[in-house]
Image (cartoon, rainbow, N blue to C red; front, side):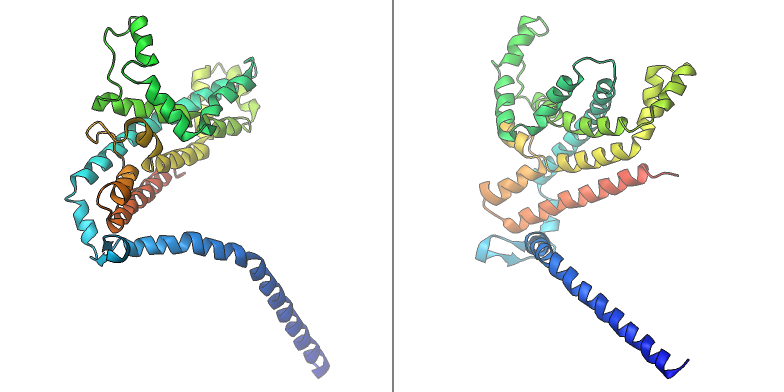
Length: 305
């Protein structure tokens, strides 16, 4: 290789490096505001709360306790009750909601159904209503002399009013009904949009072969919706682990803490009881821990062979 060719090649490499360096600098300049905001409002609070979880107290009265807050969790009956209630809501509500969403989306995907748009809107509307407004509405509806008990007694289903908000069992049922009513339509939209992308020739072939609609739903629709089912299940699981608004506004955690959830216990630790921000941060990381574990299990179970 001649000296002229070598010099020319070296010059091109230098220009190429300066070219890439120029675009690297400009690229970082574009993303720097977003990265700064993420670091300031997400990464820093996460790290700060992790450090706070190793302390006890509030404000300038924080005392470093190391893993003392974790030891306290195992001896805290209120934490045990909140954790148990949260998992009861999770195990009872999420499967029912996902199944209802699948069934409703399958029905509303039928081309022969009249007023499909109206039905879709009616089922989806609850998830865009105010959390506080609908919680107060449910509280008044399920009151001892509310419209639900009046209807049940008028129709002869029950002879005495049901203590929806004062009995531990019925209070849990009320919360489950409330969150199912609100979030079923939200998940239904995901399933409905996914169903509309399924090739209709698959159903036509199944119909020709004499496969019933029920079998088509369980053996064609559900397997093809597997990624969407996984997504909605993970998101619903995380949302239920963070359940707060409905419990706070409908039952206030009662009766006798029978509907208190982890999020509400964090609120009580921070603002209602003698404030202990460090211990509240520790309880919040319990939610993070279980959300991560359950998400990994769901991904593992749904993994293709």
